[in-house]
Length: 232
Length: 340
Image 1: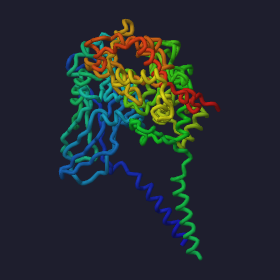
Image 2: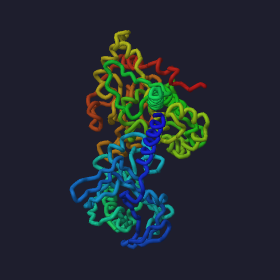
Image 3: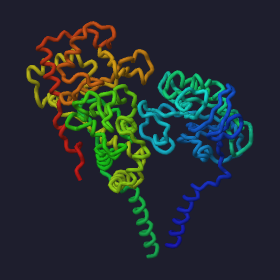
Image 4: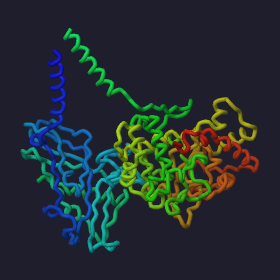
């Protein structure tokens, strides 16, 4: 009897562990791929934008939140606590596990660039939302949704640097943006490209090179950032 | 008999497991709201108060370890005896003697504030400390350095274990602990409060001053907190060197040009100098300023009608303001420098 009890407790505990350990193969994940003109992005490498600005990147960070997977049978998977910081210095942050793979066909993927207003007013948070990640404004509470920094000879700034810190959650300058991507492939990994040239196509770096506060300009840049994403 | 044993074993295990979940080393603290006061705006559910969390926050508040060169603590600009503000300096100074652009605010009854700072730029008490920590003229430190320093400190390892159950030191825990201390800075025992509770009564001049206050000041400095989460234009001309335009910087709205927070008047006797740039040294000057506004289109509507206070009225109004002093708060040992 004692043996039985011990065994059953042992098996129970084992089950708990097994439940957590999920093998990678049966996990549906999203893999974001940062690019410039369809080439994988590298820091400090020179690129030329469609606007003929030569530039090089030094920093790229972006919040992706509220990921939802739509299936052809009209069911939806909504990821819980879905807040992810993509940081180019941390390549593993670009691969986001979502849920178990199943037989259903995916029809659409949606997510937000940036952080919702409720989370912006929720005080001190942890993990990807920790202000230590350098994506939080102290003087005007709120997350920076997207940060792109680098240099370009077109910028008549100190060290020819450009800074785009796009954020702001208070209306009318709400800079969070929703992305909807139609999906029609069968796969357990959704590959989403992010082409920075699509962002810089809209900008002349000689004129626009330093945005670090919420406002109308941040709103424009937030609109441009929606052009980054495409299904690969 | 064997069956009996296995039952005891199982029962013991269940008790042990449930104990490990329920046994708490922390002592919960309760935030009492005085009778007839509004509901606090701070969300206590997300940061349950404990004695250990409060004490950790208190230690952090008084420790210069959170500044770049360990010279400036929160208390450097927020001294208890003066209502947790920086007296005698128009503009508060921080690291290397550098001077900021604003007069530090008093830390009083913060549980009832929704937004913070003179321009309301901060939206939650917990994230407020990020400003002084990272501001180059205050503590000029990086959050990750603060965490590093705390992780290396035996004292803080112990204090974090006491407050949170393990020695993981994160920015979230640092900020939550600081909030546990600052949210407890409650001033509710001034003479005014005692009169309201019918435990004391105003002198004749104080009562007259109170009547004048209710007529002329209370629409913005609302009782019982004597402040509001609002921003108003009070007729001060912009300082030519500081060029501080106020709330407009946060909201981007033209109507917010030169609007600043309505600060609390509790303990106002000791929180001099006054206004966002500390331009008035005495309460007399403050009252004189409001009394001399006259008709002015650029003022908030609450100030549209001239006050027309006589010399005696002004003296009595001042007498009332002094009844907002709360010595129990200013000298409460629970809020003072933590002695080992």
